[in-house]
Image (cartoon, rainbow, N blue to C red; front, side, top):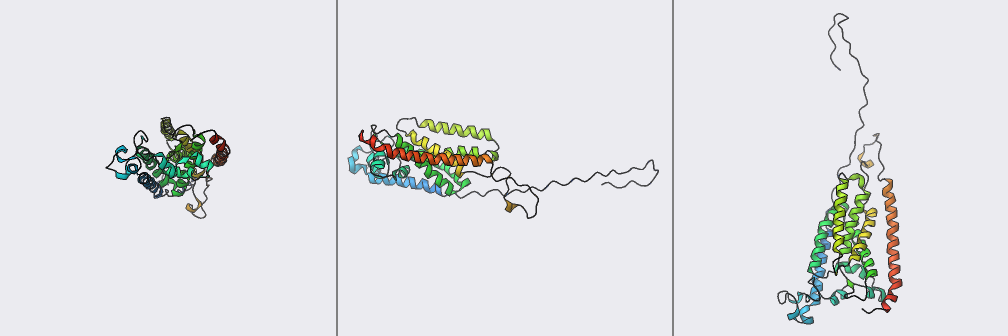
Length: 317
């Protein structure tokens, strides 16, 4: 309001027009930014894979098995020397050693009841090249995901995706080919990529540059899947892990929609219209993904143990 005008002629007097006061906008309440998790599980997984690779080389003991003159980098590496390049071009232990310590072997899984190989194989690697490629990918993808979602969700995602990759790989193994084993964390890593895609879809409202993020992620996934068509690469494990991780992302990585505020950040008695925590399509995707995941695992295991013996009877490993 301005000051009144001094008194004078009535014709020269000015009058103030008072406008009705408008109600102030309601205060906005925002939760504090989420504190990132400390990533310890992914680095621990990294170290466990390296330790397991060193252990398989130690137990392989190439010089004692076939003679030091045939082993690669002997005598520099001693008993850690690699198998001949013709036997293992990835610079690693023998197939026999990998099979002994948990490689995915369809015959062992089906005929001998060694189902644990569906999980143990993801901790083994065929060689140095295989190990480096997977571990660099693990650090690049896994640490960011663990910082955002925590060790429990990412740990479950990693193991279950690896299991899904092993399951599809065991169904795709051709016993007439040599070798007939599968090792590596590729299925679990592709599960992380698949989960990143589903996380982007289900949490669409919280992203700003949606299309750019979606296109970039699709290109990364396409390039990684294309690598699977190189000879001696188990692409079925990649696909199985990717599909498992994609479905798990809708279940484990769902986040509140944009604009949701938890009641603990709103003062008592404040008249604030709160948004629901999740949108309807997020619940729908979660339920559909859970049904498809359970059905996929159940049907895959049923098919593996139902058809396995008949296949093995007509083939020689």
